[in-house]
Length: 414
Image (tube, rainbow, N blue to C red; front, side, top):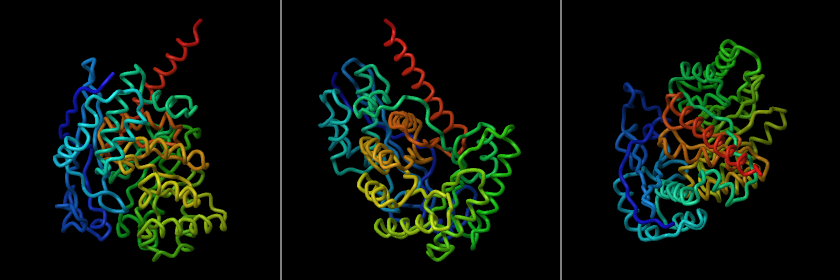
């Protein structure tokens, strides 16, 4: 089967694009928005509506394959591409990718997706177009997207749902209650993106919050078999509070781990070292410091680990316990697949993540990738309402697992 035509149209993303630099510098809330001027190039406000672009591939049999170009909430920082603009992306796709795709045979996802990813285009464009390519190949083969990836990469995993990680956004208390009542596997993210008001000058506010989360789980869970992993994203604020002192940060994280007990604790981006090489060096020293004091707290890397090459370097150096494979930042989906498989091969936890600012389509596609690659966890996305992301990602995995099981049962019949 071949691709006959390529259509694009701007659509809504699941959240907003925020200027992380301005927020870390103390931008104050004004209702749902923020006061003050943006600090990062490409922003017109500290918080602005996210943009996305649907890519529809018309196939020879008259069906359409579908993917969505989307970017992360915090664009333009940590080595990421600048703010995504849907209209300019349409022009780039028409000029650079439509000639490549029209008439293309749908014989191999890997080959066609790599050809798309080789073009020097915004990561969001390569992300969305390769989603559509994967869907097209799956339709041509009458398979799910997870089955295509499993088979082309010979991952050898059983297609079953992987643990889901939900994020509460700024609704840090009601969101946690929802997660506990729905027995979410990993929670709550926390969005600890300011020192004053969220972390505390000596980290005391986050300690109080972790203590509250632990107590709340014990109160609402109903039975002690529910023991979710606790995971907090701190956006480099711990390093800011402790002046970049790795030993002091390790001591603080160890205390946080004691408060989190009996739950496993993961802390994402405790320190922002300013560039990739410095980040690797800092996290190697931080993990060594945690081992010296016998702390089981795990470190997750996000910023400055945006490409497959970055992930190779971080995993090779042992600079993290958990790698946030941030799907929109890696561009083409082949990078996401190969990154997750590399992380697993090197004995680390592969977190198939992304952002609240994606769409329901990109969430469905990457949920299937997480299954095909045996990820340690997958992000419930898009949005910050908890329920919607859990529904979209969780239901997608359940459906794909049921299809794969039914197909296996049919194939086993004599």
